[in-house]
Length: 336
Image 1 (cartoon, rainbow, N blue to C red):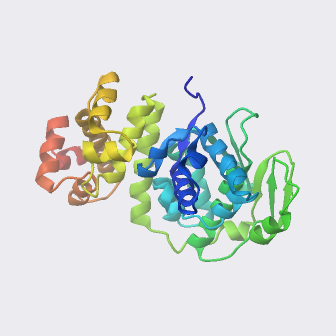
Image 2: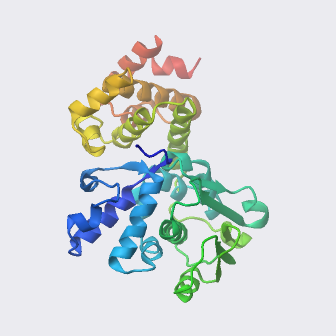
Image 3: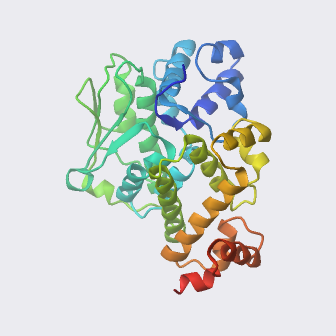
């Protein structure tokens, strides 16, 4: 029976699997009975059910005998691998904005994680959990996410700041000193919630990676993705749009490239899209139209920049496409 667990970005499962194979573990040791296909190592931005991801991290910890595998990998992970959800955080002005954007746009990367930042500005409190049944073992992945988030923010701010307190809902009887050393504060386990407690002065730290222009573009893109999800698009369409959007500006948003990134052949992708009563070209065109409208209405980007971001070879191609969609040129639409 297919899993009904919320879907979650699995790029770090891919990296973990590649590392395990490189360390000499056999494919059957790495993948057998995990729900993860060996083909994941060939996928660009895989998405799988969260319970499968959590189970794979637990399996890897048991296979290697490394009780802190998730925490250790998070403490050195490259968050850019997670894609736009990272860049929209790192392009923000401050640590506070970084966190608020990750909380706001979490659905771009995951349907499983819930982040509560309501008391972040007033009390420095950030809570998070995964919306899956309690029987889903997730300790390794929770620790991976916790250390990974702080590591990314420290990199962006170029400063080794520490929270006032970190708490975890799950229990841990060993290696607690390693957690205290990394986080730089008291860390408690077996509490009511997973939470960070930040100092106001640390939340106000500026990010060296801040980029106002990029920030504007990325927030618009993330808003477009969330809008698609709110329209209850089938998961396949959301995944295809995600893969297309990641490749538009590079001119690589072809059916062949997107299919490869999703771990399937172009023919299989075409067949699955037909099952949703659409085609790759229609999906590409609808995403371009939605992004174009957002860029024209909500940004000061010049038309040539918009054409580039949408993957067009030149402004004339963008003009022709936009007129086909709306009956107006982009310039006419912007000034209405």
